[in-house]
Length: 314
Length: 314
Image (cartoon, rainbow over all chains, first blue to last red):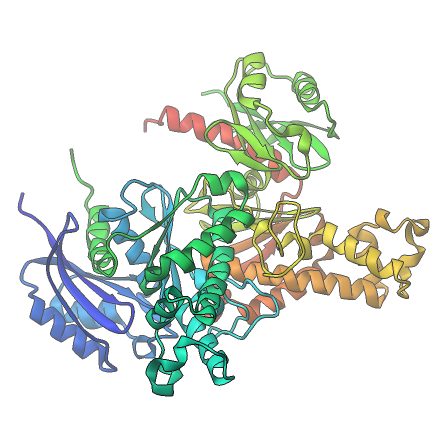
């Protein structure tokens, strides 16, 4: 039998990633371009560029809340341009192949399961730690078909208002956006810090990398920001461990670059809070596929769905 | 083919409940007696009393964190007497039948799925609202084999210390224990309230029923206690809705007697906090089996496991 291929598309963040992927999860070709407001045009152009001659279908991972019945995006707080787009019809009718859609963190979890850090686990939870915080849950080897909006779990009753409408969301304390917002407040108040030298005074241009670099140089404000975000991440980890008792928590996204301060603090906090027996049974580890988990997982949506429709005979 | 039976045992609260249950979830006979420290003796006596002539096995629902590998109870904050007991061996070897063990809220969820309010839903989350708060998750018609310790999800970073070791747990704000603790504090401070007349000054003997009754008579303190607990329950509901996007949340336990104040407040708070599209898709409803969900679900553990071992032929 000849090999099967699908196109996996990751509309998860500031970049649009498109790849031709084999059924085994091997990336044959890939493209990356910045996300734009003309999202459908960019997607179509990328599919043309990558080649769609013999594909079984196209899978999307998109940042936002998915309408599982209709194959649309309900809300995408970080990428409004994709809200309401009917990917299944618009892309499916153009390329005459089946189109599937999932949340971006959910497909990243699938990708890690197929060929990454999740390979050896039947039950794990993946968290994407970047501008926002997303989640994907693998249960008995398969993606749990749920929203998994772990970043929008409130951990602080009377906390700050979140863009999602809730208050005190995990994302408001433990994401890159939260770290930078906190740094800006302190720097504008005149706090002493190496970060003052960054960005020529345009503090809002700070990145988590700037903060981590300053922390490694011993900057107190930078260390405090990373540790505080880490502590809150630990509360989120403990909650998920108490509810889902996973074998592993796999962490991915830009922020895991700050593992030694941010994630270590999170692990310490989670160990204090989660049930001891559950904490002792969970491994908290980094992803191994990084940015490529999304495109591999998105392509796998196609193979998963097709294998359900025509069960393999032995 | 003749009917099949199992014994379901609910070690969930202050009472030990034992029933002979058919494969269809029908209760043939049942017994209730107070839990005691000599828990194994009581269990054995109850099984003898109910009759175990032709049973397929015995299923337990126990309050606490289950060691899924070993069939023991790791921790049971509200029923220490059962910690570490090896039910599978102690009961199994005595009665020469297979023994299965699950968390009490998990078996209640199974019970509601088989013959209660969960019958029409493929994906729902059950919450037991009593002295503590427990959870059980049904996904694609089956029990999710996870800890589901939803009551020990922290919703308040800097909150009160919980007996589980975490701080700010949902259970510390929304359970019967939390309500009574709050009432005692206010009454001891001399707050004006109808509740002062209860229990001849032994405020710790107050029950949630006393509080609800006073609230219905217009008592301001009692209303405030119920509404505050309900508000916190609503935060927990919103978190679960955002993470698990269930079709229904089924509420059970003594506190749902106060539905019109406590649960209504929770629903209002959840509607403010959860993603609108997810909230609009979830039904928040009371259990229909009440106390019997646990024994029915516990018995069904036996049939579920046996059907896995010998798949039905068509």
